[in-house]
Length: 327
Image (cartoon, rainbow, N blue to C red; front, side):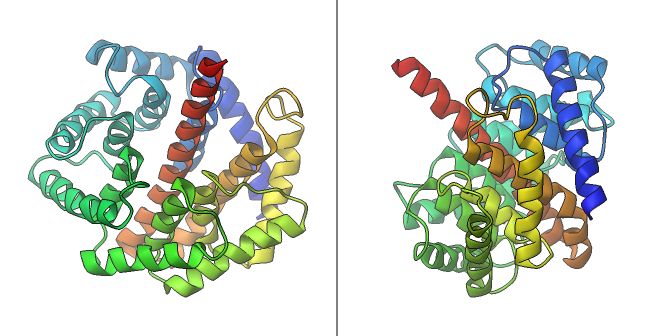
């Protein structure tokens, strides 16, 4: 496992830098997302293919499309990591049109269309209808916290074979249990959504996530309690002892700390660096998790890890842009 993590860390930095050279002038918050997409797919990014896919995207949508902005680079990475970018993008756009019939258009809805598969037609229409029903119930439970970013999770829940009532009850129980430890907010709600995609008991999932947070803290890692929590939840559903997961996160963090873009003063904050460390460990452990969890649940958990990572980092980017504008 240690060698796998070392390889993944080196690949992550290589992939990030390759993407950054090929696709310039993107937010520094978004490049790690794209690198993790390739890491998850087990594919090395090709600079020329990335440029070709960018031309495909920009030639197919307007400058004001929700497939541009913060969504553009993750979308380019998802398409470039596949074998049929043009066909996949056609299906993603068709699915986005179906989603817009039920949801308000947003960059997160575009991300949902990109991340949840490239199936099309009647099946996706049914999926979108179920997702909207789940989303309405999520808003009913938390009207001030549920926003466009939760459309990603609503669509993941719609792919889950469990009944809607069971899913809603699970996420609400996870939320209630996490509320005993973490501050209320979008981060904790997103974490409850990630945990609810795992079929284990809510009590066990919330307890494991809390233990992981405490274990990382005991090792000197100041893991954040806001948008970072969704990524912590994604890591906590991976296989392995809590102390082993925490040690892997700290090992990854120590590596990142020495890399360009993560050094003190200039670069990502300590909390962001730890979130990226947890993200990379989640990717490395994703295969072992998938091998121990059946069928669609395994796919949902891997997608949830990616959704948590994308949504959290996109939120970071938006917050940073707003802060810069305020000055």
